[in-house]
Image 1 (tube, rainbow, N blue to C red):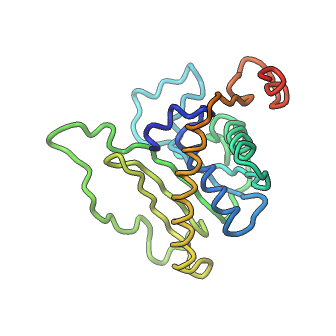
Image 2: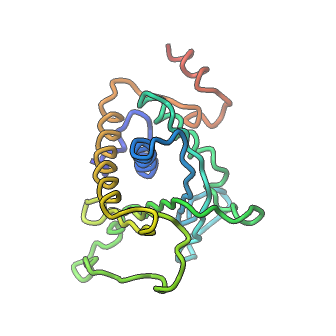
Length: 218
């Protein structure tokens, strides 16, 4: 269903849907009113029309913090609030860290997108093999818990790492089950809406508040 999420009535991107579901899950399990999240991206977003990345390879990884408000009661308000928060980050967060303090140790989230998009050859395929750790066994994790999500073979895969002194395996398993449910619920809610739901970020040419939009489309 995530692959067909382009038809959702809130104009949400796939990573936004996953973050909204993640926030709802943390809010439910840990009874949080707000969530401090460190978001990671590949850094190759087009943030300036004069930039040309065609002759470059690899990622320009950017990590930046966002604070999500979770106390809203209804799904519509939560979706709009988190969507606007994510889209308010300047330049997709690529310049965070140049002049800012280091990130707080906490929750990391990274959506890698669809990894098998460019593997369309009878000679190559992505093998489902365990890669092992990408860090030393004695290294101290920078995150209490980190989520790496990707789509391979039309399926969403969630890779989770956490510090066992903070979370039990039972707690993590329960979290993942609820997270999957919230992803499905968020997707169904957005796609089953009868009317398109606009937010200020959908109109970049003018400065509007959510209240302005609601009065316009009444």
